[in-house]
Amino acid sequence: MMPTKQKVYKKVYDAACSDLRKLDQEERFVTAGLTYIKTETGFAADIHYFDEIIRLTVPDFTFKSSKGVNITLVARIILLHYILKASGAPLGGDKIPYEDIQGLRHYYPVFEQRVLRPLQSAFGYNRQVFIDAGIALGGRRDEYGDGSFTLHALPRVPITFILWEGDEEFPPSVRTLFDPSITGYLPLEDIVVISKLASTRILKEARALSMDEVME
Image (cartoon, rainbow, N blue to C red; front, top):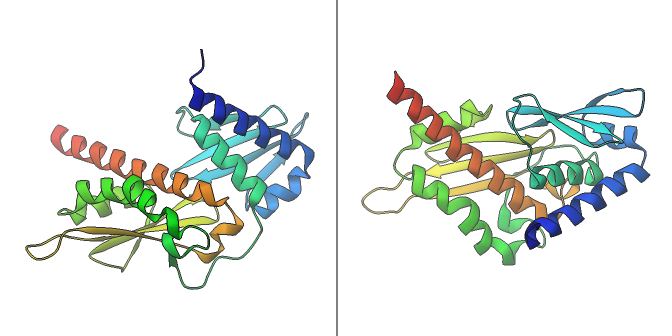
């Protein structure tokens, strides 16, 4: 029997597939900044998703990773929501923290617990591992805090992660910044989800880098 949470995800996923079937898919791909080709039965679009490329085919809705890894149902939902929501708004302007995104201030405690605290615990006193993990995921190094980088979670969804290391006086702190256009590319509830997916990838990459050092 499918767990209740998975049933909910499946319902959301099916709705997203149905919505995309009804739309001009070429227009959606262009607006989302995707490259695509026509196939005998529909389209195949490439979605840059962190450090991999996801090939989405429609109308059969298959998802294949360039890394050959499994693509979770949650990730598939995020990818479809991105295509459905994409406004085509240009990136730029002053980056904003999660709590300054309109409609999300009250959800900051949840965001902090799910996204920021795991990073603070893992990297609070080791900025180099934090930076190395971000760069290994294709991130671009930035100049905020004691260490920072920007990941492109999706073609038009950059997320900047900033670390201030802890010391004798102050505890460590991690913050995130988003492009103001993010609400034109993802539903509000998906912003914490994509940020959690990013946080998990950073932690996983750091563990992989640590194992590589042990093996050398």
